[in-house]
Image (cartoon, rainbow, N blue to C red):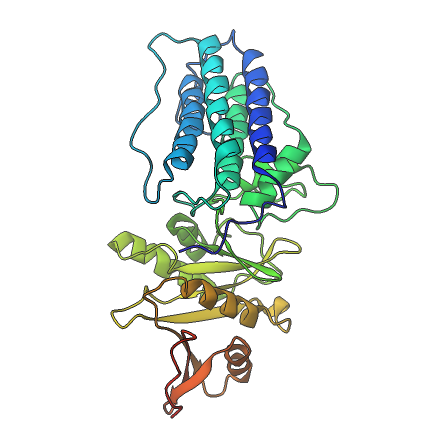
Length: 374
């Protein structure tokens, strides 16, 4: 299932391929500047040595190219990239340059409608280009800072990666995009001195609506949120609500017992205009044998009254119905909760039944008529 190819800002495959080439060149120049130093030391913040990290960059470039050329729908293409024993820093730089060219060529020739598998969501050429650029810039930083060097990529390149993969990253006018990229990946304080997040991920395929981006929590980010962390998000005042933290715990528990299914967990509602998280939404469990699923949501108190919950619920239900086996999305509201009754109505749900405590709403496939209200 897919919500679309993400936001490419109208850029062509050639534009993204050029960015991959530019990022590989930045990497090569920074690595060449520290080629005489000991690459056996650990890269900053990693368990790998600097040499192993350079090979990892080459593996990312090659692996992402293979995902695109193979049109792989599930899992990575099963191969690995290694350096010939005894390869020194100069040889490693050559490997990075060459494999960066492989990804660039793959991105340049990938059909616009192709979607390939990645654990962060299916992506096309733009998504894999952005991921490759992020990998090479960030891991070059990890290598050269460990060796006493420095890398300084062009701000526009970093901004395009942020726009494509990190829609939840708040940025103010004048913020340095490279500093923001380091911050959202846990490597530096934010431009305003915000502590680096302890859990983070990028989003290849978020669910988008007119004003919002819905970013699904990975199990690790969900566990961080449940335990009192931010989940890798910058929250509106007062957030997150306890219901969102509780939902994060449900995702973490499901991952621990093997019942977690990507797509059918908890999403954070992000306001597109400023990257602030304003609430949580998601499913209580994956669809059952009847093809139905139950949704729940909450919005930070300081962000209520703007229609975010209804917009997010309608967008998430639309995403859910891209599953051809899904028959209905349900929502349950306590009788006294007038605001929530209004939310589900605005989102397009219909009253299906009621009991003494609650009203049960549902949205069915357009071709499936709703049963009579009771």
